[in-house]
Image (tube, rainbow, N blue to C red; front, side, top):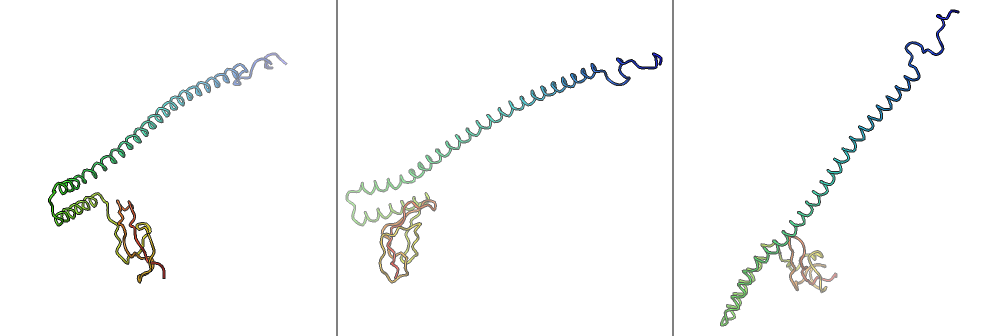
Length: 186
C-alpha cells in the first residue's frame, strides 16, 4: 500500500474531536456549570437575606401589634372603670346631701333613700349591671341562682320559694348569684 492511502495512526479522523479538545470542552462545561452554580448561589444568598429581613420585619411588626393591642386593652379597662366610677358620683352626692340634713323627718329620709336607690339602680343598668330577682314559683336556674335551702311547699319541685338576696349580672355574666330557697322534691 502506498503511504498516501493509509491514514496515519496519530492523526484524528476529520470531524472527530481530539482528546485534548474533548478535555478542553469538558473543562469549559465544568467551568460553565461552576459559574452557573456560583451565580445561583449568589442569587439564593440574596433571596435568603431578603427573606430573613422580611421575617425580622414581620416579627417586629407582630410584636408591635401585640404591644399596641395590650395597651388598648389596658386603656379600655382603665376608661371603663373610670366611666363607671364617674357614673356613681351623683349617687355619692345624693347620699352626702341627704346626710347633710340633720333635722330631716323619717319620711324625708325615706324619700331621699328611695330616690338615691332609684338613681343607683339607673346607674347600674346604664353600666349593664342587671338584677337577678326571680319571682316565686319560677324555675331554679343553677347558673343564676344559689340554693340556700330546700323547703316543702305546694309548688312544683325545684322552683324558687323566696329570694334571700338578689343577684346581679353584668353583660350576661353573673357577678353574684341570687340566694334563694327552693321547693323540695315531693
